[in-house]
Length: 214
Image 1 (cartoon, helix red, strand yellow):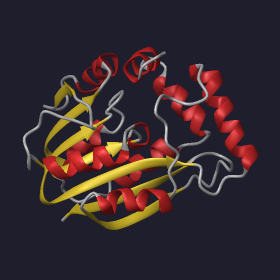
Image 2 (cartoon, rainbow, N blue to C red):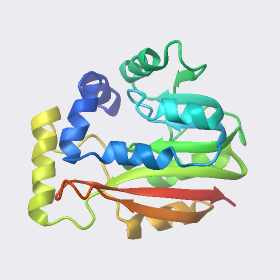
Image 3 (cartoon, rainbow, N blue to C red):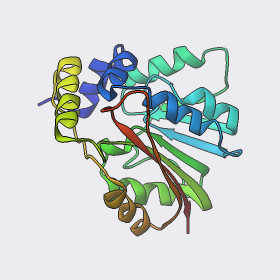
């Protein structure tokens, strides 16, 4: 059986092109544009940094960034992207259980990774490592609102691109199913935005969540 780490190591080099094809639109760019509108984030930790797609923007918004992933090959790509540009700490970490001290960060950002993790366990760990009043930002892809044929086309794009019907551990969230996971983990939801690409009907959309540790 292919583990999550093996899967992400294998897909690292083709990830950027592949994930955009699977989503069927410009969802990542739309999420990036929304992230750029955030207020200063303070000391930030990023989980699932992947190829470093969101990392440079986080660096511009933060006093410091710890960019993490479970895949060393993904981390190598992030290091390539930020080399000579930003003083970012790039390290191996799993969002479900980290070695960071409690109350270490002002902001935790999980961009397109939460759907692969154990939700309640991950939220509990974010609550532990964030300072009181700390920010939790999630960007979670969703098929909410899609027709069954659109969903099936997304599954087939996934299979043709990365050889599996779903990435290991995938959970498809909706606003209704995601909300209690966050609230029960000790966070107050400040906002959930449904980000869509109106130019590509039938593609994935995203839930952009901002929450505060209470």
